[in-house]
Length: 170
Image 1 (cartoon, rainbow, N blue to C red):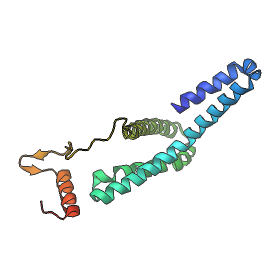
Image 2: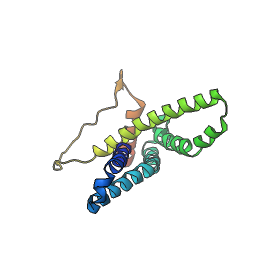
Image 3: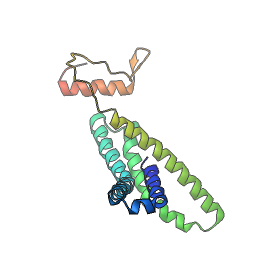
């Protein structure tokens, strides 16, 4: 969204430059919006890396070290490697096959990272509740099933964690 806004503002500034030259307030607002959009584009990957790293560590502390709990930390490390190391690797490929492979992997990485960024943004937006808080005695948390008459490892970990923190036996 910010990239689209930056491109739109760039073309707006260049197309209506003569009209805007006579209106200092409007051009000032558009330039400020352009700078803010570029700033968001530049800082978004760093914020995304930091948020995923902090949340990954929080999940690991809360639910233990398991492969599924390491995904957000792994994502932040891979994103950092992609942004820091991958451009240097691209400069090393001088042949057509290396360049083609680099472009394909880059597009796939950008696609996957965009999907994860959109998911993260939607998760953050879902944290905002416009309704009043309700005083509920119980809540039902869905998402951990039972296999036959055995609990899944995720549900077992949640039960054990709850029992450990409350001091009760399961």
